[in-house]
Length: 85
Image (cartoon, rainbow, N blue to C red; front, side):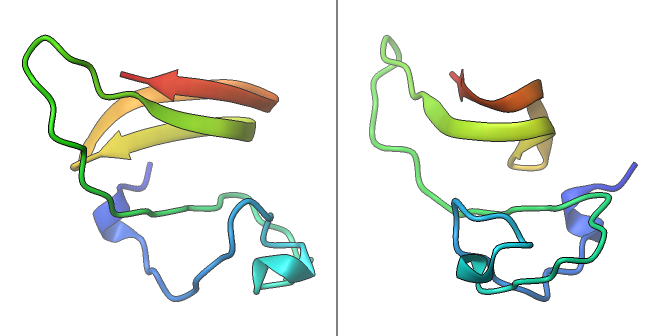
């Protein structure tokens, strides 16, 4: 089980494309047992009574979502959206 800090981040990908797609900027059609995606963002200012929701438009098969080094959600399904509060 690998953690984000153990990943070698040596490529950039154009989302929403998969690494196999030429439009991803990678175009590697080899076998990918695992793909890691990383994105930095700042949550908008919000009050204690307000929520911040992170939307994923589609996740293919299985994902574990980490925020600030902590697992906050997992997902399993085919190209289905999820959101995390």
